Image 1 (cartoon, rainbow, N blue to C red):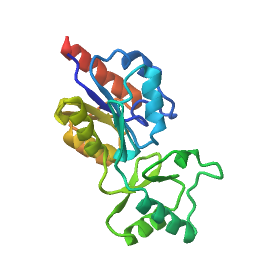
Image 2 (image 1 turned 135 degrees about the vertical axis):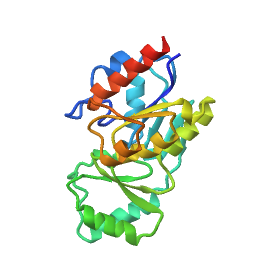
Image 3 (image 1 turned 30 degrees about the vertical axis):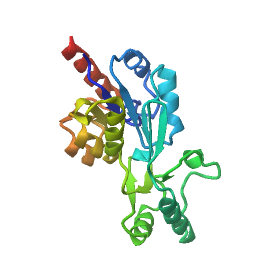
Length: 227
């Protein structure tokens, strides 16, 4: 039997240009074990991807701030502290960097994401002044201001409990520091070649291939191993 999967999206199921790789729709719909889409994106994004894959909507969104499994949604992150940090950031002249139409944050429930063009130094200074309940995570695609008490790894533990699976039964693939907590609890972990230093250091294996090329190689190996 193939193992259950915990898969990041951006940088892991995508091409270098950020598009969903078409192989996602070839390899994942018939994967004969649970597939958890674990992302920093807002809740609707992984739900939509699961829907179009024809799979159960088992997702960890907003870096663990929202978990949906077995038809139940749990909002785990506290949105008030991150929003207060971002408001203070704006008051000091900071700009989120998305322009007037900010669809990146329109549906976020527990955190705020800022463009990588935003003033990172100022953002981290404001977050540090707010105390220990808020942190800034750089996913390589955005700066996420989030509660320290949530993570993808804790989200995977919650998913596992709901599905009757231990976290170490999962194989995880990712590319960023927000995947480190997932790698810590999964039984096997892989960082694609484009991964940042934190993910590479935390993974059991750093792949030779980048983006979906790396993920596809893992899935093919896991399927071959199960035969």
